[in-house]
Image (cartoon, rainbow, N blue to C red; front, side, top):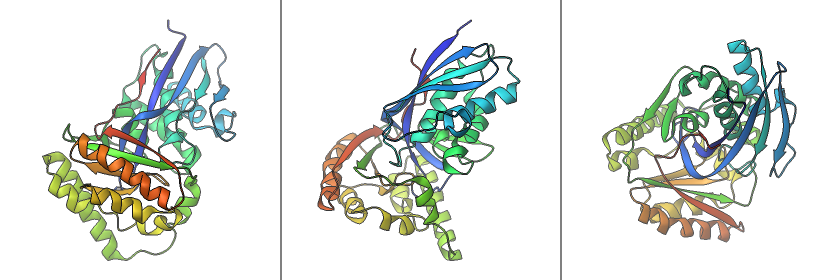
Length: 307
């Protein structure tokens, strides 16, 4: 019987512009690790959180990783519990899925300790319960891609992996700034025109069809967020310049990663992505922000056990 496991969950790009709360992509590079031990006590406890720039709750019920394992224990009526240690590798308030990564890494590690491990789809409801602690709602645009890898359409009841050409790459540029998810969501309050919903639906359909067909022209036509981006962009210094820098380097589209302030862009090749990344960083520098950039296949990795 295995008593301890360590898992890694990659970062993610939530929303992918046109799929607010339901579409996302896993991203190679940055990520969180969780070490979980099986304990005799029928409870969940967090004993350490390392490399966090801000104080994160050790109370399991208030932590995404702890809440996810509490949900797992309850659903399976487990007679044993879990002890968790987290090692953060995703910047706080970056729009890179940091809260979701801790949650998913903990679930993947705990799953390896079960007598009958669950599938990624079976873990999904428990990941939703964990993510809700941080975001205030049950949405899977970050946790779905982390569980399955790549681009995933994540509704409350379904995870659908979207095929994407292997050559397509994404750039993620993270400025030295923090934008908390709850503040970014508050910016979305207010009325919306029905025409904008129609336009956004059309854009989402074009992106999904373009991925399915491997048709970059459809993605280029659709990767344009007309609902969320206009309201959140003012919260991100230099956003318009960064987005334009990506488009000037032949991006299929560019938008806000998750709640921001990070910005992502899609490209048809690794070479185009590599060329665009420094230009996007320069645009942030013009606005007064140092930044770091990451390049990943759009088909990013899934969370997995590493020890």
